[in-house]
Image 1 (cartoon, rainbow, N blue to C red):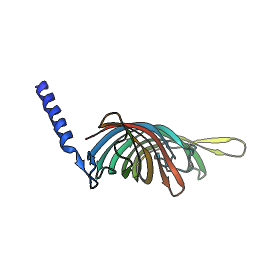
Image 2 (tube, rainbow, N blue to C red):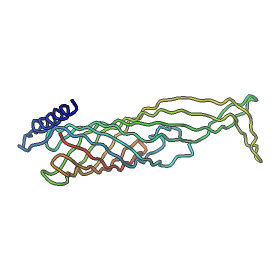
Image 3 (cartoon, helix red, strand yellow):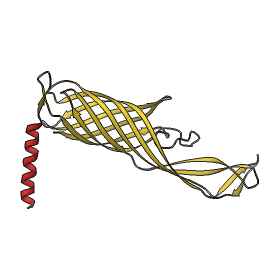
Image 4 (spheres, rainbow, N blue to C red):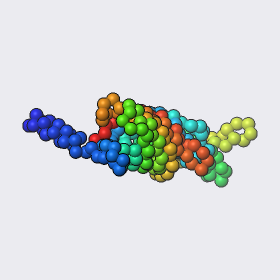
Length: 226
């Protein structure tokens, strides 16, 4: 049965590859689909990593590994639309927040946020050149980030009286929130072929907020046309 299944699968792949070849309006043949997985370095503002607090100690850009998968649909030999998902390891942000003490004073308490982030992207790509080893391309679209955050505060607060910090017991709290972020992005790279269908895809991409660049991604993907 396993041998039969393998033979059937090989036959389907072969027939799909033969039937999938299409020709655009300029008479240039192309395969309508591609898929690739990628790994890279993702540099992001804390807000785009899921922490919206501007009072965070971690206010610089944060860099981690990133993993992704993308599926694209070619409409001509040059124009493609694409959807994908990008994941990064969970991370922790630290900061402080203001609390009201039982005596009516206002103190500060340390808190940490455990954050999980996934980004879904939708975009369009224009690919240059014909029948070459490396096809440069540019892409634009939107990234939708969904961050799940668990924020935990400590069980003591402090007030600084000008000479020293005085500590007071407070109730430990835990809050769960979900943040959705939408960011436009631009990307550029090369689709470099090892064979007629198997390729590598190095890429650089950036995304923005109204205050400027908030994400920068360097990644390398490997995939196949079909």
